[in-house]
Image (cartoon, rainbow, N blue to C red; front, side, top):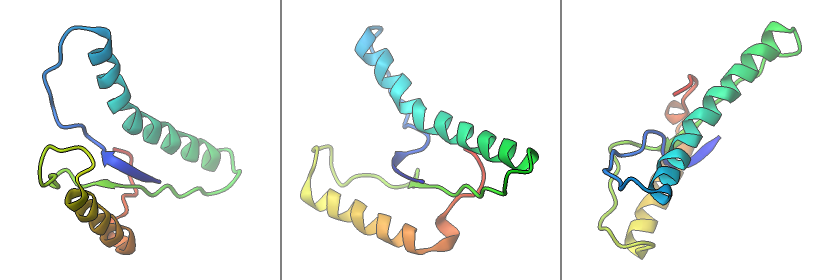
Length: 98
């Protein structure tokens, strides 16, 4: 699975309103979905229905955009290059749930 986001969102202070709460909920969805996928893979193995291997990669927690502008060309190119580098390196793929 390729996740085009940080798997652990960078902490932010949000206002106590529904859009902010929704933002926090959505940002947690990737990690929750991955945990469910790992649970399904384990259940499949325990039932004897096959051995499913789950691998995932996400934007490294150490990566930071060049600036705060949305869809900045230089930042997007830098992120694309980082994604290609990570995807090509088998050691970059995680094999355990976040």
